[in-house]
Length: 398
Image 1 (tube, rainbow, N blue to C red):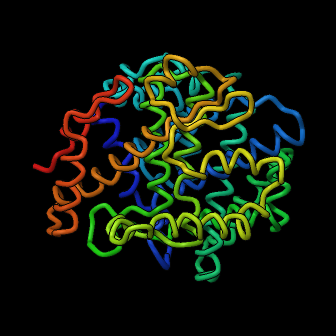
Image 2 (cartoon, rainbow, N blue to C red):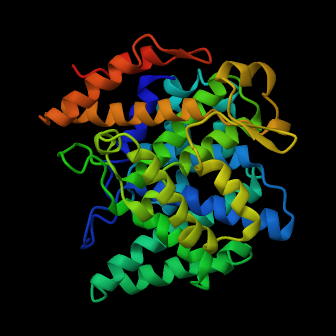
């Protein structure tokens, strides 16, 4: 994993959306992309479970990453400008984006760069997955827009924006999930809950630059876990499980808020109490918003999220190391999850958040102590062939 690529992820936390409108709070590209990927999971599950469509989940994940990286490179262009450029200069723009990203993505194993090129250059590539991502983009954008519209419905041009967004969403009405979400009932409630995670700022007790929310953090950890998974030579199901396990790892915090690590570790047994309470709230408030056939998978992702897991004859086992999973259970039939790697990715994301703030001139004992503690924890640490100690060294505050 190259440092430059990971730094690109965090650039999205500084890209302000709707910055030509009155906003009651900051709306960032990172949060919107995270919301989009959660919505895409919901849309894809509806197509898969209720219409029997074949979803290439790996392609959906990678397509989301490709579009994320393209958007970071092009920054927050107004939609009319972006669409006009795509109509007239698509190839030139995509070529420029690839040229800028090439040093950072060319070494990702498994043909990531080639699929990046194919995604933007081949019209018939990933048709359904691309359509799901496009619908998710408009739905996530509309979620933000409703907040802005209700605040300033009198601004000139806002009615046109509203109509354009509604027309774009209507163009994707053939997707069952779009129909479900537009009803504004249970499935929309789940999406709305997830969207609210952008209101929860991480490191609430200290100033930071750039600020990150729980929602944006979840996407960062998911993308880090994807990169780790391909580095480990994980099978496709393992890559998918690791990505969504990371994307949903803080989902219960929409009900409990972000409880900082020092509080969790301050008193023996408090973390177990929090986990138990989270499970009760998830059962009562979150899962009823989704079809019952999805519950087992969601539980598999979020329950004991940082434990290594494999399924053997339908029974979940948590006693195997990452190296054992690679050697013995690296196949779809075992539905493997590298929970310990996800935890390291979670800590790496927190370490980078603190390190970037210190490098931007923020002076905080909380940030300094966290950096020192995490750096010491992972010094010379190698897991499943990945030198995490080296990664932490790359982001050590100067």
